[in-house]
Length: 214
Image 1 (cartoon, rainbow, N blue to C red):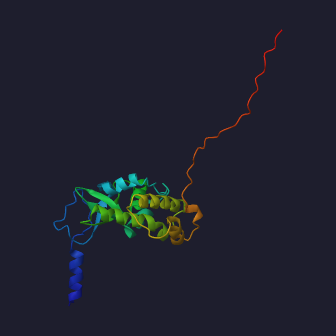
Image 2 (image 1 turned 180 degrees about the vertical axis):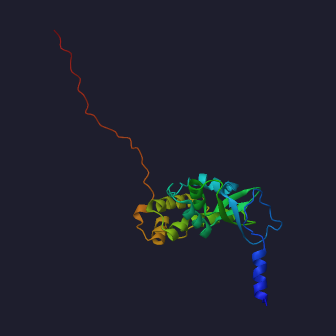
């Protein structure tokens, strides 16, 4: 005799796989729904959201280090399953979260590789940019990036503060980041501006030599 629990389990298992890849991803009727876990081909994500692309250009954000070209697809795909990309849709899918992983996936994986993503809905550009900056500034502390990456994070943080799109009250960037990453603040200081000073050399005055008459 089947219990109600076993009947529910059979019902769940008999449902179609919600993560089946499709060339034409249907737009959901209710865009206020909770985030969706979807499976798509990497090529179906056409790039960053335009507001993030502009942010990269405005802040002159350098690309962080990528994994080796020799990385095995199976190992990298398992990382994507544990840390799926975050995407949003206008007419097509665009990446808005796990951006560093997205760039790395494009370097390592074939464009037709099937990957998992989390699709979000109804986000403003302000929310997208704010979430991205939080990810960009804090991920190195969580995942142990290289020290050169942290220096680049510090440079980007200063640019974001100068443009008024990120705030860090009552402490310099290098102090905040050195505490966050447990590293010395000296290496996070801004590069000194090189000013070409005009060097003036005082030459001794020359005396006039009287002409010699024959």
